[in-house]
Image (cartoon, rainbow, N blue to C red):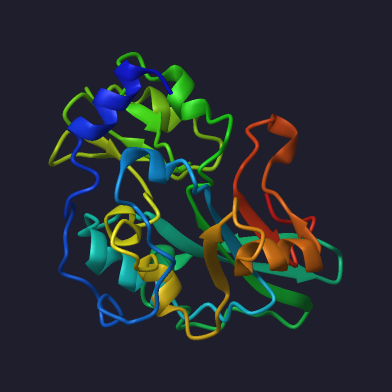
Length: 251
């Protein structure tokens, strides 16, 4: 990263206590990640990644609620959400996500011919080759030194190009602030050695977060031991959200 990018990053005050610190029930949990962020160069030791284990997700929506509270996400918008997939005996696929699963899936819409059903949490994939950063005309969308795709709200002009470019539908325009927004992996939390709010909130450990550069980290061990898939891998965005138990029906 050149000096211009370095100055831009430090200007954001990422290393300070930024963001909304009023968390969910889990916000001040003692669970955390290894922390060694004393200098800018220390950040280069990290490459944050995310695993979603769909075989463990029960669609309770705890992750969505924790994210909403932790990041003060506006009504009708989501930084993370959960989709329900139903497959019938004719292999027809039905997908729904009532209010992003914020209130879980209260109604059981299963019909008699459904032979398989499962839940798939979704969020920003923090891609290595992110389309959103490439189309931003003012450079407001960028990669942090530790591999998180972030938005410089001071420079974002709310044009919406990144929203259209994202193949995962994870970005939106905050109509109140007039800027783009999305999942940041709770960057204000991980800079203090805490886990993202959604990871803390999951009662089934269906979300795993960690440093991909550390061969001893839990996320690296799981990726070496388990089969995983990527969403829309054919697009070449090289996403860093890895899915365990990903069915072919999931797009």
